Image 1 (cartoon, one colour):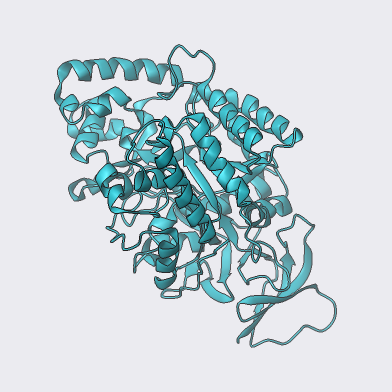
Image 2 (spheres, rainbow, N blue to C red):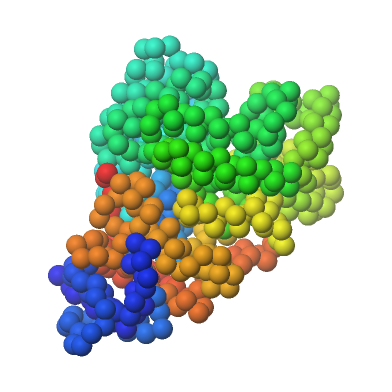
Length: 544
């Protein structure tokens, strides 16, 4: 087994403890020693001088959608930017949708369009159970480590005939058995996507029984809340209090009733008029933690996030497609409702930026905002949006802006990221083509550069802990996340004086991050001088 000595580095071990001058010795796929510099150094087959650099555990993207790409033979093409920003482990299966369990019923009930949003190359779905899927990823020689959540939405689609609303008892029992089987196979927890079909229609008692199964297994629940903004399609217009506050309260109450460990996914405040609710939501979480509820949340350091072109279309219009797109009265009603809704939320068509046009002939439009696309087509932004929706069957992906702030007004985002209950993520849907979510390339370097070094919003040790050890602990990953003897050798070396994102300049996408020097996964070097070493795949499936 090859040995590697990383010497003269500033060791930040992922526990939150203060850093120190020292060395890390790797033997095979494990860390053999972490020690302060004191006298003679141990010998090794290879020595790396990390003078002027931080040596830290590999970063954990604890809210990822990369699991959809990992079964593909060429997934390194689209996922290597994660390595180049220091990510060594992803937690997949988020927002209620994991690639498994997957059955013939899934295809019949849902069709494939929904799942095709996650990855822009066809998957063969030659698996049925979670165990099958994890084995398949192992066989694909994953680029990086993967832990997987079992998706509530996926389980319902695979196991229940009832598409929406309360399931009969026998269907619920089948779903719960599938969840138990997935958790027993090594899934690290359960995820809900309560802002999406079918999760948005699930009653509270269904959410509770799923939570109880996860709690019995000692595993967490993650949740994409029913609403992320002050108003939403999820709750009646007559409900006058902020919808996102209600959605958060419902899940905090579920955690109180069931005792489950709760992770609120991507705590964002969508639209300018939702930003003032950040303080209320953070206080609710803090109060729940004081009362003994085991709740944390996660966030990305951007004021935009990936979603679909149909995200703002109301249910009545979606249900009438494709005819609705050509009906002048339905279009007129939609135009009026969107104008009112945008006004109430604080959005505009300029906040839609095309990520992936989903059809080859429109790829040159990727990176442009809707008004720019409308100008190219000599039409209005409203009509351009409907054309994109109609002709891509809702498959076009967009970056939606004004999430928790905008340039120069990021107080809500700052408050979220600075909270010690916040862990860090990318939430990036990564395609082989298109304009990438900037988090795909730079989320973790941006936190270390902008928020730690430049703005001193929190310490380097605190940031690294929330990127590594705290995330591993949250999901019960016991062999990674900290630099300590016997742990798996997932290591990142970066220059704290340089590390940062390379920000996008519309319509040009973000570039490679700065300051990431070397990355190791399971003792194998996968990044050198900031570049992925082509062909190297050293990841493992993490079964919890």
